[in-house]
Structure formats: structure tokens, C-alpha cells
Length: 163
Ligand code: GDP
Ligand code: MG
Image 1 (tube, helix red, strand yellow):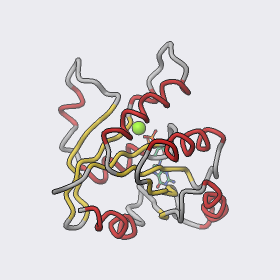
Image 2 (cartoon, rainbow, N blue to C red):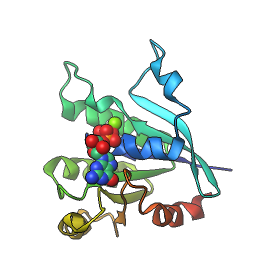
Image 3 (cartoon, rainbow, N blue to C red):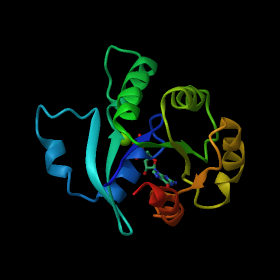
Image 4 (cartoon, rainbow, N blue to C red):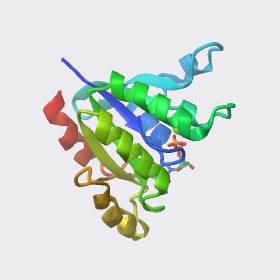
């Protein structure tokens, strides 16, 4: 038995970078097919000896008539409902933004299991944001750098009991 992880959070926090790191390039062709929805990308993640399904809420960045806020809410709720566990990413360099608070609220109400990920955490520029993220009330943040592949051991430790 495996589990499904949804990576959620506002645009630009590094969701797709982490998704790509976990999944590799195996999805690139699927993604390029016309008519395939790009709102939610699904792939098979590898992390150490774990294999699990991972969902990237990828449609947030696309311009539509609908407000970003409404779109974020709908997409996030869909991803949450598909997932056993949500990885809520923030940009630790940017600190906690009002939009992050909106996400945290959705997750607190709707998700069974949330892991808080403080991404872009390489270097000391992230320290203040990491400290601030405790205030989201989602527990201790996992320090991550999707771009540099840091913190994946800590993510593994959080996910291992679910496998
Ligand atoms: P998404 O909109 O949440 O999917 O975010 P993306 O994965 O597209 O990343 C947004 C930007 O943040 C890109 O320019 C990435 O290169 C950058 N980024 C992602 N992860 C990291 C990280 O760990 N550290 C830093 N410094 N930048 C990152
Ligand atoms: Mg993305």
C-alpha cells in the first residue's frame, strides 16, 4: 500500500521544482499532449525507498477569467480531497504572506494530514521566515530546498510512517 501526496501552496513557492525533483522527467511528454489538463499533474515519486503518488497543483499560474483566489481554493480543495497527506509549501525567504494564511486556513479545515514545508531554505536568508511559519499552527516546518535537493531526508522521515 502506498499513499498520495499533494503539494499545495501559492504560486512561486517551488511546488513544481519539488514535484520534478521527486518525479524526474518521466512526465514531460504527457504534459505536452494537447487536451491533457494541466491543472493537477500526477506522477510517481521516488524518495529513498519510498514510492508514492504525488500531485502538483500546477494550474494556478495560468491566466483565466476566474480570480486567482477562487482558482487556488478550488484546485487546492480538489488536490486535498485526492490526497492522503498534503505538503504545504511556503517560500521561507518571503516569509508568511496573507495568501499563505488563506491556504493554511483551507488546509486546517479540510486536510487530514498536513506537513508544512519551508522551501527555499538554503542559507540564512530563510531563517526569519522559518521562525515565522511556526505561527501558521501547522506544526514544525520541514526545512527544504527543492532547487538544491536539501531537506529531503527530513521529508522522508515525515512520509515514511505513511508508507
Ligand atoms: P510553483 O509556482 O510553486 O510551482 O514554483 P516553481 O517550482 O515554478 O518555482 C518558482 C521559482 O522558485 C523558480 O524560479 C524556482 O527556480 C525557484 N525555486 C524553487 N525552489 C527553490 C529553492 O529551493 N530555492 C530557491 N532559492 N529558489 C527556488
Ligand atoms: Mg508550478
